[in-house]
Image 1 (cartoon, rainbow, N blue to C red):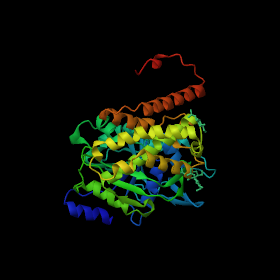
Image 2: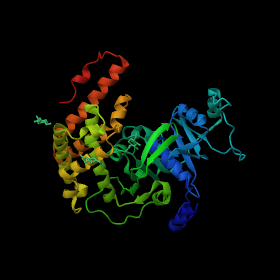
Image 3: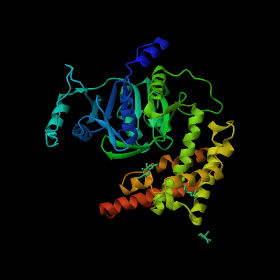
Length: 414
Ligand SMILES: *[C@@H]1O[C@H](CO)[C@@H](O)[C@H](O)[C@H]1NC(C)=O
Ligand SMILES: *[C@@H]1O[C@H](CO)[C@@H](O)[C@H](O)[C@H]1NC(C)=O
Ligand SMILES: *[C@@H]1O[C@H](CO)[C@@H](O)[C@H](O)[C@H]1NC(C)=O
C-alpha cells in the first residue's frame, strides 16, 4: 500500500483507504479488476454487482475472475462484493470477520443452491461506505442508471473513472445525476485498446495487447481551449491515476486532457462509420471495403464528422488539428481498421443481433449534438442514427413476435 501512504503524506489530508470500487463487469471491468489484483501489493477492491442474479453467477464461478491468455487461465480471488438488491447495496466481504474464507456454496456436482444465495444476502450488512475511487465500465447508455445507484456513496472528494466507448456521458451525468456543481465527483476518462473477448461471466480472454490512455478532466468535465496548465488534481484522482499506471497488464499511460480528447475523437470517428454501416448492411467489418458505393457513403459521413471535430471550441489553438482530423486521414484510418478487423462483427452489430440498445446516441448522436451547438447541420449522421435505432426496433419487435399497435412513435421528430 505504498502508493496510498505516499499520497496521504503529500496531501496531509484525511487518509485514503485506497479501496477501488468497480462497476460493470463486462470485458473491460473484468480485465481491469483482474489486473489490479495481479499487482504485487493489490489495493482493496470491491466489485459492484447490480443484481442478485449476478451474485449467483459469481458464486457459481467460485468468487474468481479469470483472464485467459494463449489458452491459459489466470485466476484471481480476494475481491469484496457489493450486491444491489431493491435499491440497497449489501456488503459481502471476501473474508469473514474471523479471518476465514467463506465456504463454497457450489456442491461437488458444480450445482449452485439458490437458497444459499438468498441466505447470504439476508445475512449481509447494508453498505453505505463512501466510495473514494470508482471505475465505471458499463456501456455508455447504462451510465446514468448505474451512477444513480451509487451517487449517494460518492462525494466531491471521490474520483469516477469512465472507461467506455462513445462520448457525451460526462455531460449527461452532470445534467441527470450531479446537477449541483459543488457536489460533483472528480472525473477521469480512459481509452482501452486491448483485445478482449467474453467467454462466460467473469471470464474473459485477452486476445491482443493494447494500451490504456488515462487523463483526469478539469473540474466541470469539459475542457476549454488553451487550458493545459498542470492542475493540482485531488488526492483520490492522483491515487487512482498512479495505481493504474503502475499496474503492468494495463499498459497504462497518463496523458493531458487535450491529448486524450484527440484519441477519443479518432476512435469516435472510426466508430461512427464502421459500427452503423455494418449494422445497416448486416455485414462483417471487412465487407465495407473494396466497394465503391460504400466508400462514397463513408466519405460523406466523414466530411460532416471532420467539420464538427475541427470546429470544437475545446480544440481551437491546438496545432495540427485540421490535418489530424481531415476527412482523408480519417478515411484512411477507417479503411485500415476495417481491414485489420475484417472478419470481426462490430460491437454495435452484436448489440443489435442480441436485441440490446446500441451506443449510437453516444457516437453519431454526439457528433449531431455538438454540431447543433456550433450551427453545423449533420443531416447524414442524423439519418444514419435514426436508421440504426429504427432497424434495431424492427428486429426487437420481430423477435418478440409482437404486432406494433402503438403508432404514436411514427409521428415524433420533425
Ligand atoms: C456504384 O459503384 C459502381 C462500381 O462498383 C459504379 O459503377 C457505380 O457508378 C456506383 N453507383 C453510383 C450511383 O455511384
Ligand atoms: C488489407 O490488408 C492486406 C494485408 O495486410 C493488404 O494486402 C491490403 O492491401 C489491405 N487492403 C486495404 C484496402 O487496405
Ligand atoms: C477479431 O476477431 C478475432 C477472432 O474472433 C479475435 O481474435 C480478435 O481479437 C478480434 N479483434 C478485435 C479488435 O476485436
